[in-house]
Length: 307
Image 1 (tube, rainbow, N blue to C red):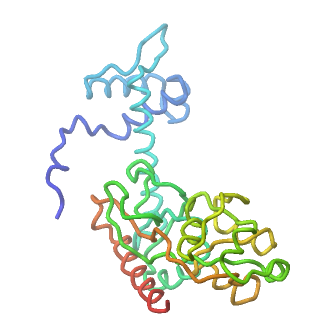
Image 2 (image 1 turned 180 degrees about the horizontal axis):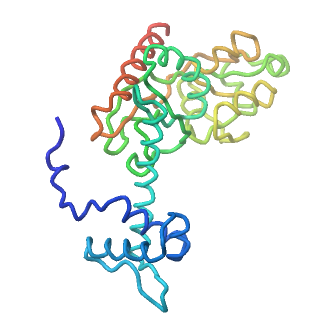
Image 3 (image 1 turned 60 degrees about the vertical axis):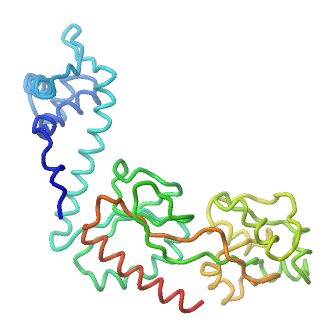
């Protein structure tokens, strides 16, 4: 059911795209002449559109100085928001034209999760939903859905994304892994000996090694070793015998299976976070997202059964 209060905004607060485009172009280009060239209008027409917007909003947006329009501080901030809104409308229109038979899902992913786990499975979703197009962007941190224009995101941590719904995908189980050559050069009989080796660190998991040692009853060493911002580069460093990597089991499986990495000591340790699909609370009925949510939930249920 649609929220009726969203339809009751005064019309003067919903100016036409012609008015908003002229205003945004003047703010961005710095003159009515440049805005007119960009919009294929006359300079006078742009000036009139700006005046109409000021009248519509009952707010002065520009100071007039010697035939120049100088945006006020408030107008500059307003232009930034309008620019994002116009970009969102343009992307939606392009998505409709590119895919008139379905819909578009704009998805933010975590880099390694996206490339190593999600991407190989996406053909299955697209085959089952031929009318849906997925646009993917990478985000490492939480963001504002309204400002960024994404319909959903893959999130690691806890179900605490502000103003968002959460679907838990699976927990993270961590393995200590190293290259066979590294293991041969640094034989380790028990987890305690691991503390003496170079331990690769991930920025988003600052306490991962401490937890791994705690579960194994070992005093954790002071944090040291190379620092990475993505699992993908950490995996390649471990394969290159740089040190020991603490990796999610689902990411390490293929390297362990083909012999490029091996579990070096101890058992798998459940991490402190989990993977979630998140989406805005006020966007509960977007059909491509609903379809993707159902498909992703089923895929992760299969993964949990395999563990």
